[in-house]
Amino acid sequence: MEINDFIKKFANIFEETDPASIKADTVYSELEEWDSVMLLSLISMVDEEYGIIVDVDELSETRTVEDLFNYVNSLS
Image 1 (cartoon, rainbow, N blue to C red):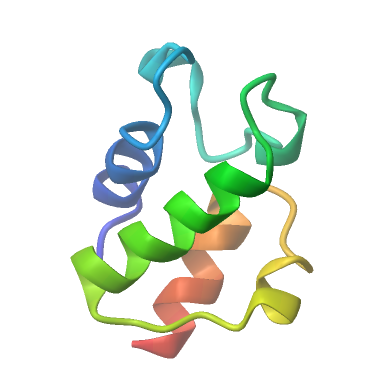
Image 2 (cartoon, rainbow, N blue to C red; image 1 turned 180 degrees about the vertical axis):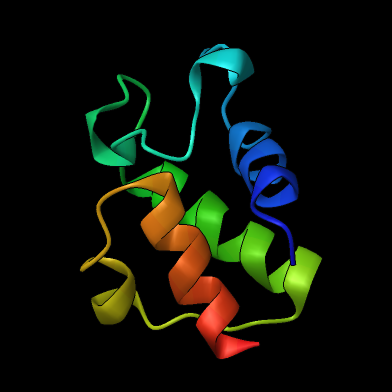
């Protein structure tokens, strides 16, 4: 799994956020569009794209997109 590929897939779950604005160091919870529906979209994307089921409690301990990537990558 490559971080740039993960960032693109993560950015694609957003409808109103410019994908180019999402970087590895982006604090995803500070994105204007981020909410509980986006969390469910993220969980679904990770399951569909990587076949990985994430733990919501552990996921909530991440802060940046890179943290998300590292967490998901650690499960593969």
